Image 1 (tube, rainbow, N blue to C red):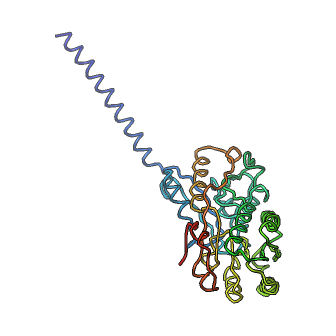
Image 2 (cartoon, rainbow, N blue to C red):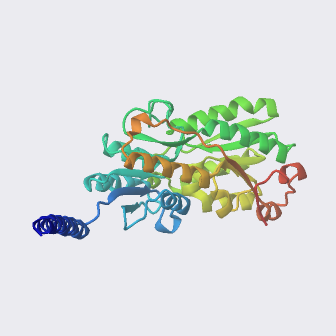
Image 3 (cartoon, helix red, strand yellow):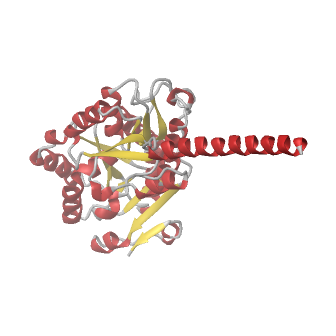
Length: 340
């Protein structure tokens, strides 16, 4: 009987300890549940408007497990096409102490870089990051900036080759560019270098500017008219020019029946003829992987800048019909997308 009682007391003591253990950890779990979940906040800086939201980028974030409102917060800042708003918007994001800033265009990246040297910056689509001094090098970016960077010079070289195939009788091509941009200066020089081998001469149409306010309509119209006077067979427009001057360029090209070539998708919106560019969808998804790595502790300086891997050729047959031009079958067959 004495043995039984001792055994019973041992069992009771063990049961009591287990009960305390369950209650203690239950209370801890309850307390944790009451605590707000830690959310990483990123800033998103874009030259465009909310309607232009980069869905490929945000879908890639979701695929990587970053769900807005659950484990990530996003502070959006849209310049709505006004370049001079970007510096102030970038400073706002820095003032919010966001974990990192995602910048979608070269102008947005530059504004963010001027606003901070410590907050990580992820480039979604930058033109020639090294030439524009956004990073020290592709392999070792250094500083607080990394992400995706295009090689505009290579794109424009390929674009002139496509122009030659599309317009084999062309002799002169006008190039609308901005000498204030190091990347576009390099692209223009690349175009000049490849032109003679294609039987082309390049007419330089310069519009030197830093902000949209500097692009006065009368100044732009005068520059474009020079292409008509010189009887240029085609007009090549560099990306930023198309973003800002698209409708005006389209009106000029239609009036003068001059086909427009670009390395920008705006060729679709503004009825240009042909665009050859990197896949923005692919670049956006790959940029999201940088956000994932940085939020998990990686430093921008240690993440090499990547070049795009996928290219797309877009041909606008509506424009071709409008200006009375037939696209050669061998060029049309290579198009990734045809607008009819």
